[in-house]
Structure formats: C-alpha cells, structure tokens
Length: 164
Image (cartoon, rainbow, N blue to C red; front, side, top):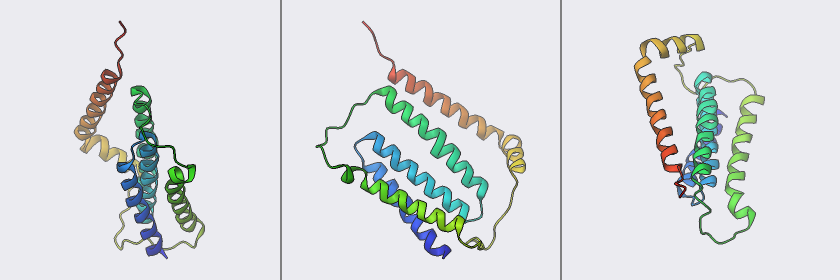
C-alpha cells in the first residue's frame, strides 16, 4: 500500500512540476508549484522524516510561495495573451493533482499505521536539528539569508516605478 501511495505522490510531484514550468500564467505556475511542494512534503513524511515534511510545507509551500506571489503582484506582469478557455481546461489538471494528493494524504493518515518505506530511518528531534543548524552549519544559514536578502533587494529594484 505504501508503494502505491509513494508512486501516486511521485507522479503528482513530477506532473505538477512539469505543469509549473510550462504555464504562461504566472499565478497558475505558482499554484502548480505549491501542489508539487505538498506532494514532496507527503513523500518526506512517508519516508520517516516528519520534521523535514513539516519544514517543506511551512517554508516552501507557505513562505516562499507567498514571496513568489508578492513578487508576481508587485511586478504587475499582466495576463498572458492566451485565448479564453473553459474553466475546467485551465484548472482541471490542478484539481486532479490536488485530489490525488488529498486521497494519498487520507490513505496515509486514516489508514493503518505501517512502517516507513526506508529500512534505515534516522530520528532527530527538532531541538537537535536546530542546534546542528545554528552551531555546525551557521555559515550556510547566514549565506542563505544573505542570498534571500539580495533577491528581495533585486525584486524591489525591478518593481520600482519611475514617476515623471
């Protein structure tokens, strides 16, 4: 049963990622990327890493996607010049992917508890994770924060309007 759920979530992640990079509308691409992050979070949960799964959903599907939406709205890219299509053609794939993810999640959480797929799972508490992150890997954390700061400054520069 775990293998079926794993392959369903993997297919949802791959398909939603492909849909994200092939969309002309930026909002549609962001929605597909959120679906991809949710399916990856469930895959991490299945593999015995609930902390990484929670971080995947909170940081990537939450915070970074809000930042992407902020940048898209700030730059006011405008709608792509695509012909009007029915609602089900535009949002149909997203609804199907979301249904697959919700079905897999319900099987995971409501089904019988089973062992994770990986034979060797390592457990680390959030306290140990935080201590390792901010003691041993503090330089990488600071480099990532500077990279995000540079991205924010670049987005503000690109979105700045020159008023005559």
